[in-house]
Amino acid sequence: MRRKLVIGNWKMYTTAATARELTAAVVAGLGDERRVGVALCPPFPYLAAVGDAIRGSAVLLGAQNCHDERQGAFTGEVSAPMLLDLGCRYVIIGHSERRHKLCEHNDFINRKVKAALEVGLTVILCLGETLEEREAGRVAGVLEEQLNQDLLGVKPDALSRLALAYEPVWAIGTGRNATPQQAENVHSFLRMQISGRYGEETGQALPILYGGSVKPDNAASLLQLPNVDGGLIGGASLVADQFLAIVRAAL
Ligand code: PEP
Image (cartoon, rainbow, N blue to C red):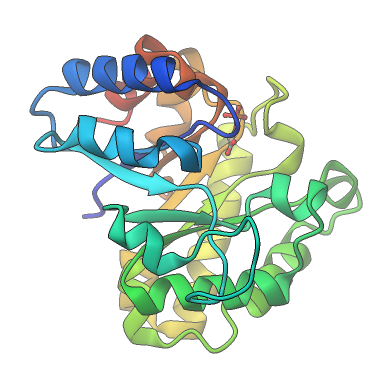
């Protein structure tokens, strides 16, 4: 049985003060609830403070990105070992905002995935099609291509530290979510793809999260689907009550 996972992606929001308040509210609201895994991914400057504030609680720390090199002359970048050093368990890689707005390509994403797995982080690899690709009937082809390229050379023994997040680009931050049927179809397709590449047992164990306009009022219909193992939550993770309601909907 896969444990559900709900991850808050704060994107480039919060201040030092609001990050502290939001973390405190999530920690207090979650209490000892450990049936669902919960992680917060604040902006880099607040990782250490959020890490301090969650210490001893059920909440885990994640980052929104990392570089593929361990260190070096890469001004403005943050490496996977640095994230580990700060107490991160998770790192989001391949978010569509980075793919589409910051021109990140699959070969770079693939190098980051391998770098993060190598140091022991758990990777949340985001995949998803644009509206144009969906309307052209290309969902399966696009996702298969992303999997092929992003997981190139990823060894089977690292798969226990991989989660996928299916995030249709047209659903992120738009208020328009995938229907439960659309989400379930894609998630079972992704599971089949991983089983085909890494074996049935690995495919069955893989957490596949849904992301894209998950809110308290639609969370249960998405997060209780057989092949949906939790959510990657953007906007609603910035409001403690909404985020906690989504965590409860995953129970
Ligand atoms: C995201 O940032 O990954 C996301 C799913 O955002 P939102 O929930 O705001 O659509």
